[in-house]
Image (cartoon, rainbow, N blue to C red; front, side, top):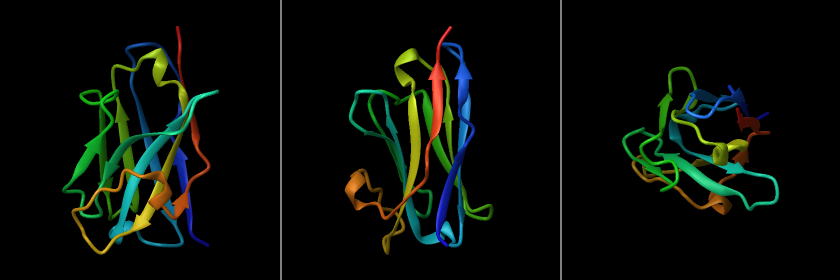
Length: 127
């Protein structure tokens, strides 16, 4: 069974940091582009960060640029999202998603292009 599992969420004070993990089981992520998305209560889902299957290309939403870093360790079949300088407006459920790509440098920033989704992990930024 193909599955993505997010972890690492929690409660953190403004200015703090968290590292989210997205672990795959049932398939290898080597040929999959990955995206992190988030959805806050009452708001639409938004793309946060994206990485190509090779890890050589990344992209970020303007709201997180300079604060978040996406990376991947294909040997561990895991993708990470390092989140620094967190703000209350970063509060949301964070999801990772995967799509198989033939192009190892392409990043996919459209949610509808993704085939597999995790269940999400809650991130709450509050004092």
